[in-house]
Length: 287
Image (cartoon, rainbow, N blue to C red; front, top):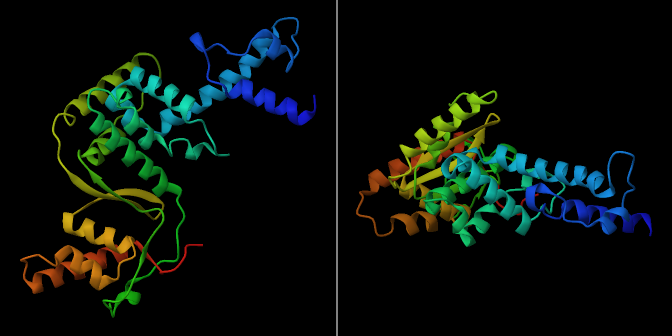
């Protein structure tokens, strides 16, 4: 067996989903071909140490990245979801930052893991993945207010890669912020108290749907959730899709009965706000 073959066999054994009671699924023969036993541990037990370390780190990563989802569906359901998701959508990246990349799509296909309110859980996943993107996503050269002094209807923009626009069915942005304000438990009873407080916060929000439009972005290395007006959201979507300013405005306000002066005032306010937040970057292919 070559070194490469050995590495692949060990990786396959370690990365295979754990079995009952988090036991290694590889049999004694397979384990013995990879590692030798010692005076205290069998080959399976030695290999199991690495397998558990690998899987527990993945589970911990999802636990840390999706605290809102964890609170919405409960800790036990979250553990089942995490294990099922990782078994079907294993990590394909060198960094665990991307572990939850496909979680929203997977949860859409597997609503049975989403608790009593799948729509709420899915909204929370979308928000929390957008939070990850905003935290460390790529930033392009910003178009500042001076670049927009003479706004032409033929101008096009790109939105910053770290900016995500979300059309949500529930106000999970408020819910996530309230969960962030809860004190962290330290151990034992403290963690139980924290879980109870999380449930109380969720119960106050989970029963009432309230469509909201949110821009998840960062400013000065801090992630923010900014509520948008429906028309503001649609206009940003149109601009992000590559439509020229005039075409984008017409697609949103073409059939509107709003007075032109009011539309012009909104445009001025919105563009000024977007520019201050650094959401626009120069048109063309991203680097």
